[in-house]
Amino acid sequence: MKTILVIFGTRPEAIKMAPVVLALQRQSHFRPVVAVTAQHREMLDQVLELFGIVPAYDLDIMRPRQSLFEVTVRALRGLEKVLQEARPDLVLVHGDTTTTFVGALSAFYLQIPVGHVEAGLRTGNKYAPFPEEMNRHLTGVLADLHFAPTARAAAALKREGVDPEKIFITGNTVIDALQSVVRADYRFGDQHMYRFLEGGKRLILVTTHRRENWGEPLRQVYRALRRVVERLEDVAVVFPVHRNPVVREAAEEIFAGLDRVHLLEPLPYADFANLMARCHLVLTDSGGLQEEAPSLGKPVLVLREVTERPEALEAGTVRLVGTGEERVYREVIHLLTNAAAYHQMASAVNPYGDGRASQRISAALLYYFGQGPRPEAFSPKVLASTSFCPPAQNSETGKKE
Ligand code: UD1
Ligand code: UDP
Image: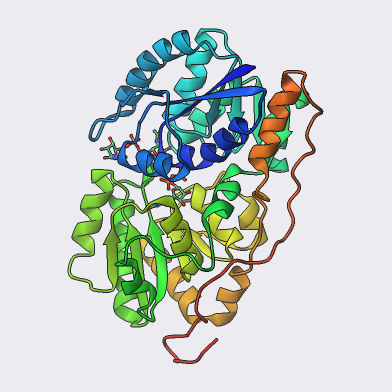
């Protein structure tokens, strides 16, 4: 039996690694052991609880407003001891956070093979997203196995000289997670959610947190949204605010006194995903939402200049709008007042996964250890939309669309 040490630390890593941990638990050849750095605390614990994952190691490194240096040093120190004690046959890390990079680096220092889940995404811009582009790149350099979610990500790795034998195209595990929680008859745990879900307004779901957007860019986005809500009476904003105080302070200040802007605590994943399935439009700088929302048939306006996830952009369901106040305002108003533009973006596409990515990763690990055949690559298909949104209404003409 092979011991697989699965290392993660933030909310999105947990959401995307949970299906992998569950798939490995179902496989008798593997003993998955979970180590969390807890780079996030409350936002990580929400996910662990939902998926019933109990970490064997919890480094509890989160400190308020901690710097990249502090995250790196605390995680590296903690993981040295974990790896020495757990002595895994392989370490799995996910994505592009500082925990990801430090997890791969720690394994390398002890000459333990590393599998990188969600490998090969690139913007080609060292500082965007920051520091994630470099975290992912550096992790790729250290990795022995690369689980690329799409053919494009695999191609990027090959261009960088990675041996194709070490690359597996799996789909993104976020779609596995999403499919396990989104339901047409889902009942929200918190009754307050029905205030805006049943309030008859078109909901704009907002999330922001990117480091490169801290300060003036975030303030411009919030000012643009404020103007949207003031102009269109049938629109409400639902904004589960990231726990980072930098994000909170700006949001609370700019949205103060607006009764159609609902600032919430970070939502448990099942509530969040089902809210997304029922909203009208998504405005975000998140990576994961760019993958989830298209499969739910929700248009996404991305608050960035570049993205490492161009597949949905090409499919037309995602658009990059940057963070300038005028541009964001115009793009949101355009989608909310032009039915044709909205419907053009609202078709469901699944370039990122079919719900079987974690199965493929588990099969690829069996293959790596000489216990099974090489799994077939994921190839995207257009699947039916899972939209629970009421029919769109043009608030300026009052006409049903
Ligand atoms: C981190 C990742 C980013 C990922 C994001 C997902 C790095 C450098 N950044 O960014 O790639 O997209 O998570 O959300 O790895 N905080 C809490 N409670 C929590 C979580 C955060 O209070 O549960 C606060 C703390 O004050 C913490 C701060 O948020 O110091 C920032 O957390 P950090 O992990 O450094 O950065 P994120 O912006 O969350
Ligand atoms: N998410 C959540 N609750 C929230 C907001 C987001 O569970 O209140 C989920 C979301 O569905 C996605 C992930 O968190 O799967 C995205 O995390 P985040 O935006 O923090 O990080 P990123 O994807 O940008 O790395």
